[in-house]
Length: 388
Length: 233
Image 1: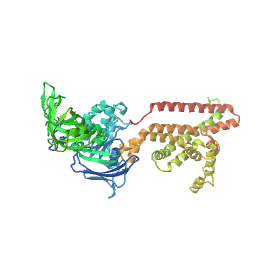
Image 2 (image 1 turned 120 degrees about the vertical axis):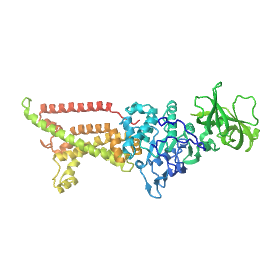
Image 3 (image 1 turned 45 degrees about the horizontal axis):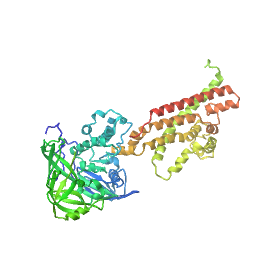
Image 4 (image 1 turned 90 degrees about the horizontal axis):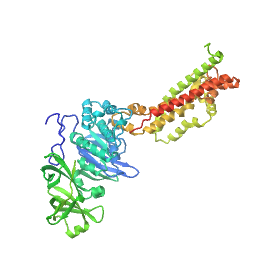
């Protein structure tokens, strides 16, 4: 690979997680785990978590408003102080009340992106970016240049903060946080304050961030869309408790997800674009359970993509259907059946090769088809969303 | 000075005007230095003391100046707490001196300095300081490089108001200062003296001058405030 050409998507390891290929050594990578143990009491919830997280990739803290995810993030940053906590990031202890260790926020090598950008209005964009740089020992200008490059804000440097759009403000905020060469990047619902169009604008930049940086990120959101696009590890919070924690595909395929993901419950698959059908403008995605045909969006062959298959788009038949308009038919085995958000519905967990699919069917259908664990069925996938 | 119509009046007037300006400037500078940490504490404190202290700071807004002047006179006198302190330091008593006027002015104009700065700090909120901390700034560093610049409009307002308010002092100055020419006779007490002596022409000149000055100050303040409205985005 030429040194100037940065790869826009990277190879996939065996476990399905993308491997970060940016190797000019500007951003550090750490492989050790992070440990968070916190108890915090607030008016509407009592936060009580004990988590072990991987030291790389994006860990998404997912939950509805009021589930404690922002408080958790602020505690990790030291913006809120709670007694008896343990915050250890990639082997470095930032807070350990049992051992009497506490680093104030300004001593923690982190970057924080707030929900409302929160740029300094008395400084230009350049001034904002240099604020942290000036105060980081050992950080050099190349980190700043790389961040500006990564987020495409070179044209905005001399502007005042009130001359920026919402999306531009967020990108500047992210670059500002990266300029200090943090060992952990914390993002608190960075897209929540943006409208749909701006969000679609900035998501590719965040994906690029995920793909090209080697620093771990802790990303708070209540959008299942962002979870599907960005998460490597998913932590689901509900009323201050951790409901699930693990690799995103596993957590999403869990049967107890409807409580939190609701209508958007579904599987996240890792697939490769194998073949294109020019006549019908379709491409075939191969995953470790079969193939799916989706519409052609001009992505190159051989590319690794994430694919979302929502439970509401999957139906089940006992025999392979003959003449049907649905193009994607996959042989599966019923693994488990669980309740859904409404008592008339059930969520069926299907084993499809080495992947898991979720299907939302009525309880009556489960009864009539006599669906039980171990039964061989066919999954009809009506619609597949390419997460890109 | 010979081309001015009333040389006698003029010398007294100039002395009073100079004293007034001196008093107002010194008060403003010292008040900004005192009010800033006070306003910062009031803006950010969650302690129980915040309410009572904010009320004490705001007292001069409500009390008649003569009340303030009276208590200060007593305190500065030989038997009062401040008077005993100054006597112990070998400075004599501050009543009827410029230094006493300065002390009185600082207390009298305190809310006019503290409140604009306090409101500016409150409008800024916690977020900019949190952002600064995540960008490796120590609290003191963040105060000087983030909070102060963002609160600039508040400081300008505080300075202008303190200055103008001190210029307009009468009751406190009269009580503490005793209206001694060249020492504690400021413009406001000078006008009072002229009226008492029925020298209405001189009173007109000084009073008219004060009116023009006050108007110019307020006009300037409103023009400046229109230019400087910075909010956190």
